[in-house]
Length: 103
Image 1 (cartoon, helix red, strand yellow):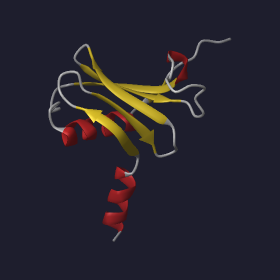
Image 2: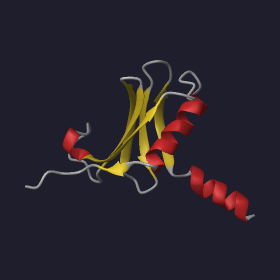
Image 3: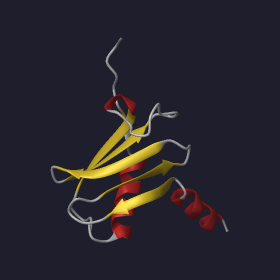
């Protein structure tokens, strides 16, 4: 039973609201604590951005990004939604905080 519980805990970390596959793959959703995230392909890399809680508007701005990760497209089938979702999930798990300039 612990294996099933661990598997469920690992796979509830991201909830996808939209995924578009292909060479211009992109999508968005929520991480387990309710913050929004998005992903897209940029310069032959997968880019995942996690946004701060309580966004002021419907479209996040650059200053709303609190963590980000990039991953090379090697071993990702951009036409397979499951492969893409797994790559996004792995990248989001390794996202690093975005440094902020002092005010």
